[in-house]
Amino acid sequence: MVAVPNELQFSELEEVPVGIVGGLDIHRRQITFDYLDTGTGEVSRGKIAPADRESLRSWLTRFDHRRDIAFAMEGCTGWRFIVEELERAGIEAHVAEPADTAKERGRKKRAKTDRADARLLRELLATGRLPESWIPPNHVLEVRAKVRLYCALADERKGWMQRIHATLFHQGAPAVAGRLFDLDGQAQLATARLSPGGRQLVEVALRQIEHLDRELHRLRADLIAIGRRQLGCRAIQAHYGVGSLLSVVIWEELGDCRRFSSSSDAVRHSGLDVTVWSSDGKRSKGHLARQGPSVLRWALYEAGMSAAKRTSPDHDYFCSTKARLGTSRAALSVGRKIARRCYHTLRELGDDAMATIG
Image (tube, rainbow, N blue to C red; front, top):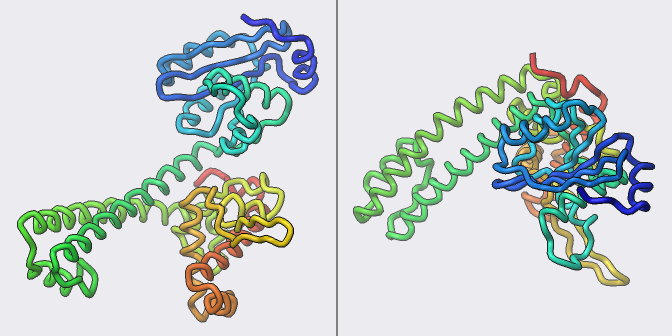
């Protein structure tokens, strides 16, 4: 136990409406804790090892007779099971945005340690300065896991396709003109003059792609079914370019839009906002922030590409932007518009937007 200086006790007691407030620094081997009992002014520090559900559940039994407790942690890998165990024990859980938490730490004056990180989280929570992240309901987390698995498999499939094309080029074989899996593509691959090692790579890659296609087909069907049933997904499908699959991605990544103060915050969350450095008469060329979830940017980009169709209400805007900046930037610009529209739609739905899937 460590006594806390009086001035810190007073400032925290004024800000914290709970009896115990603490921070948890998460790592794969251990969880470092730092918590303050505002009643006695004592701080407890230590480690929970190994960092798993059973160890944490056992450690939390020390708070069995208390319900005035709050803990904060950064939104890094592992936060989900910790939040679940805290809520199971009747403890208030807070998840901090890692980048904003690092800003609150300020310039490093001494070595960064797990104990210092846990203490910082406790102090930010105690003084009401914690940069909060949204904690999705469990059913949204499950959908998010499916979406990110789908994207991971799609990226892996793309990687195998690129290996085939690279092997053909590396060994001087003609590039496949059509799709690899149509009749012409298969005929070209079969007659390509490749070394034994190159031929083996192509055959293995084709088998891997075939297996990935089966998994992707099942996942896509699951996600589309969710998009047809979930009220929030169905609502944003009213926006041109947002189909059953993309609506699920946008819905689970944007989440409860009431946490955003404006549609600009929703765009910023996606990482599609343009960063600009400007001072006096000097101004650098803007570029995408790319600080939000990449799967959300992918979904908004794909939805934005639909504006290339004449039936899109954004077709004229897409064409004018394409003429100035190119196709990709035009799609991103439309994607920002779609993000704003989805924000307003989900915000107006309120609690229904995140309602449990029936």
